[in-house]
Length: 211
Image 1: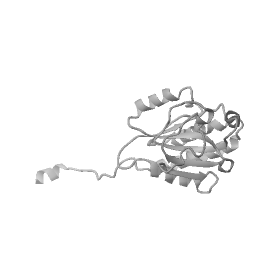
Image 2: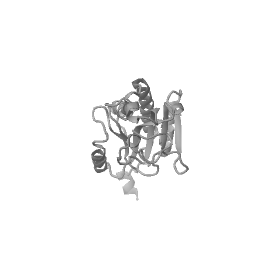
Image 3: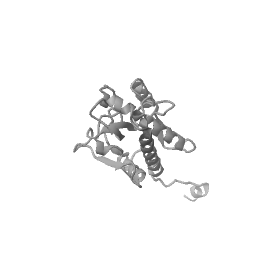
Image 4: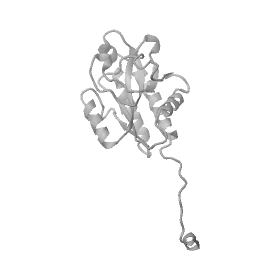
């Protein structure tokens, strides 16, 4: 769980804020994510969904991971997803999982997904920007930063007894946000160019004889 909506709001990092209930929210998420992904070079895209199903508010990441895994199940996706309800990535195994991902995907571009607390008026907002998420910051845990880019969902209000706030966050809101984020990432991978456009080089025996 990330700290709050202001963590990445500075001049260095561009931050987009999208209300999950907007009719075109998933499309906005897709476009913003594509703008952040690397271009001009082949690089594995890894989605790391952080959180646990033991806390309603902190289940945003694993829900996104599960929904994405189901969408990618019967397709040859160029995106790799880690962190699901069945196999969550949380405080106790975060560093271990990151080490495994680095071994499996050399020089990967990582997008960190996490829940976030913020101001009352910002609840329901999805944030997308450059730079990593800082898991555990909202509950004073010192954990590794994750990602070249991040997507966070503000699921509740910060400022007082954050751990209890997360425990008492409405699942309905978290699930709706997770569906919107997952759909946006799915659309992004459908439009993201995984290979440069190269015209196939063909050579025939007949051509060789005429040279």
